[in-house]
Length: 153
Image (cartoon, rainbow, N blue to C red; front, side, top):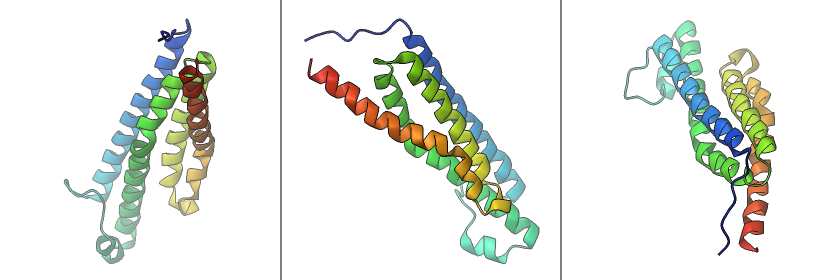
């Protein structure tokens, strides 16, 4: 069995992975501020349909924004582990490019979450995070190619 060689610039990949941790922390803290504004107590994950529909207009907006912030954060959690794994694999091939793509992904997730909570655009502001989504799909394919190449050596 051949040993995997870690490229000299692999530290940049690790920094981009750390950026994803900071992104998750930021998104979680955003949810906390939206929760407080909407007055949704713990342990409730979302404001219910009934709460939103029966709320006065101002509170309704706060409840919808909280639900959107929560959804943006949970969407991050749904893809975070996969993205980190892909970054670690792709970095074995092209560490600086991988690190840059990891940064784009992190910024994209933040833009997605911020845009998702912008109800002036009916949630369509999340499309500002589209470059991050393209990176996510691209590195998944790229990670498969890198892993295949390592397996076939």
